[in-house]
Length: 327
Image 1 (cartoon, rainbow, N blue to C red):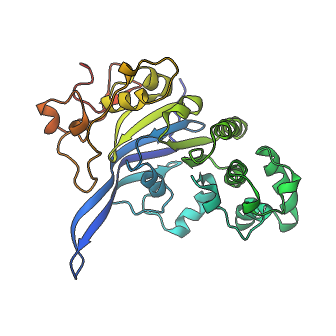
Image 2: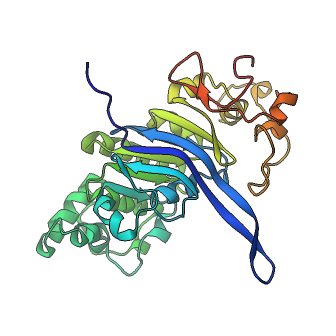
Image 3: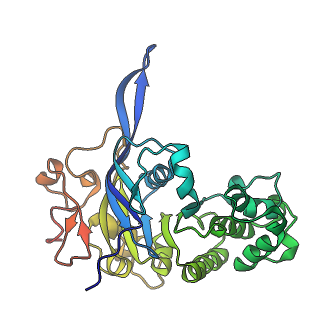
């Protein structure tokens, strides 16, 4: 019997809280609980989609993994190594293996650098190539993302949004990473261009054996690219499982509402789950289940009991709802 594969990325009870300060002496009077007790893992070569409404903590979670946000509690392990509070110097050896593609390609590309300099900068800094090899390596990377030699000496402002995102993808794969965090990588693109970039990401995943943490609020793209899906609400996970299973048979009321909002031709309006009220502030989350103020199935116990994220009758599924077996 083969030993189980060690997770490439493993988060345990991760918390990222921001202090709220008041007064002349800046006393801490509370915290914004952007990420509040998230545990998840990603296997080598796997794509995990992290979905939820804007403001639920998806990007904050990604930034914590990258070391861009301080962690209050919990742990982050990458390739079996604890990097929760690793310094910049300690992170340097793992940076080639952990890359990112940001939402806005124009903002994430240096406007003063040519495409060749942008996509080979990491290779030079990590001594993967010699300066004289820069052009040939850049041409190889551009070919990987469907761009030609004419892009080599041009600047970011000379490209369309989809082409700029391809340049960002080329930069991310240049060091042959193990994991790429894709933070809303297609949300700023036209629908037709979205499909092209998604196909590109899947092709590169197969070619290089990449794993992705794919962050999005659009469940319409999740079925295309993700092996597993984790649904996040107000800083916590409410449901996880294989993508096809989560989308075709959602167990949590919040997941059902998200999926019902996906436009589908011929879908009766009566199938739409409309949530009432607004998302509570993360500085003052509700007691008990955080979703209960908006949940159409909430009972008194939901207002006092914090539901754990636990396995269902299907061992591949986890749901944080005390009524998940009833509704």
